[in-house]
Image (cartoon, rainbow, N blue to C red; front, side, top):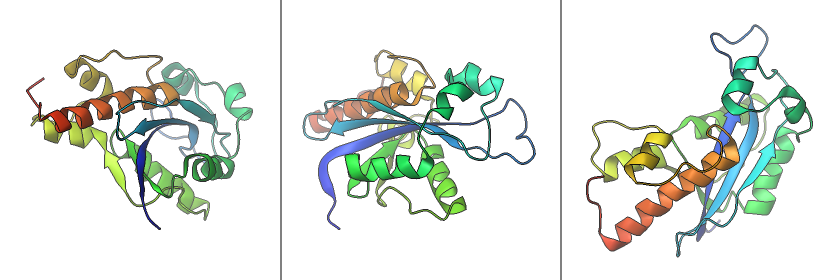
Amino acid sequence: MAIKLDQILVVDIESTCWEKTTPPEQESEIIEIGICPLDIASGERLNKESLLVKPERSSVSEFCTQLTTLTQEQVDRGITFSEACSTLRKNYLSKERIWASYGDYDRSQFHKQCQSRSMTYPFGNRHINVKSLLAVFYALPREVGMAEALELLNLPLEGTHHRGKDDAWNIAGILSTLLLNARRGSFNSP
């Protein structure tokens, strides 16, 4: 299958989480998939979407709600993980496009959740880790979090941090800045 080089799908997920240990008989599951397609030629963020996903093997803890603002009631109205993966493939051509996330957690969590449900992985094999890319481009001594990356690049944090669609939008802004700076050859220290 030929890779489409028109857009990079920037994805950010939120998952069920707990302050300390995972309760018995529960597992961390994706509850929101934030998507922001980035036009490769212009560097423009095209839109942002949130797919709320109903968890099947866990529930939203108070800690998780404090972190993400997502409640059990909200995600209960969401779609299944299978439907979300189908939406990624059909509406975003996720198998045919490069996708990106901030760090490796999102890629790893998708693999883990697809494997535990014997489902097909919704993406192709081309993934960009924006967190590593930023650190390498600017020769940082360590990888930095998304909020710190935005500060380094003088970009605003738009929306609510730890909401998938807003984080995807912000990550796409970071990636756009990296792409456009690379084309201009302007990688000065932040």
